[in-house]
Length: 318
Image 1 (cartoon, rainbow, N blue to C red):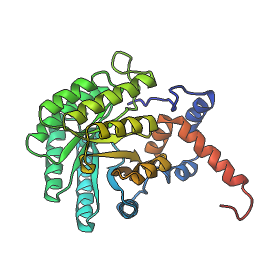
Image 2: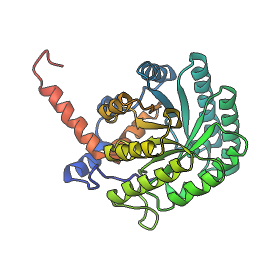
Image 3: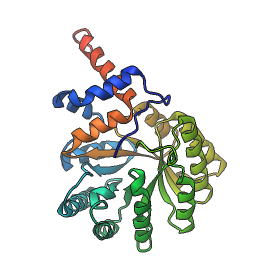
Image 4: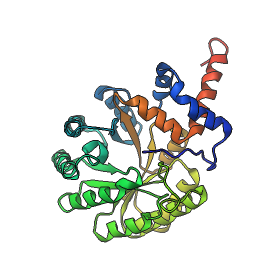
């Protein structure tokens, strides 16, 4: 699974390329220092502390256990077991949170029948806890299988939703088919993986246009959407559609990654909208952090600049 390398303008500067190339050479303790902003620790208790804080601040959370690259069937069941532990903790503490799951972590690339079996059990467990499972979307070879498993689960459960990616050319059609099947509970994001041109839009302006088009298709048909973006132009488009279709506060939500554009996050919440923070945690934080920085080299650039500013700051200044 390769990750797209681009910044907010759709191009990658020479400095951004340098950052991406040198990230694997960076000492792990240094990367861990960066990771604190984007990863909620390695343990369940550390993660729960982050979720509690967001709940106190009026925000919801979705929890992701890092480590989707598995090689043995037993790892899929072990990952599901950890998610069950999290669901129990959410229920016990009455947290406003749910879970996000990658099907590759549940065995999709090893055995599709196993993946469905594991997910069926996990979604059933979530239902017992009155909780919700979001199925994350991965790169395009996984798209059809992910949708097929999702639709099969939706025949039995309504506490499960799916992610669609606006940069894929097929997404508008996928959204329509899922809505037609009565399973319209989405997170809509842009998408991060490198895909061939026949599969995905590459121009950032076209991706934004397709995002707005797909979002309108979802909202006008009564689907619930987690509007996942850090792009303020797309936030504006979403708010325009929310106003146009006179949506109530509980008929949609915004979603953002932990540690990314917290100022925009606060603006959205301050405007009276519900917002859910994507909270990843786990022992596989290193791979996630390096991947996240590669996805958006401009983030790495800002981090490095901030690091140097802190180092050069006069004593006593924070």
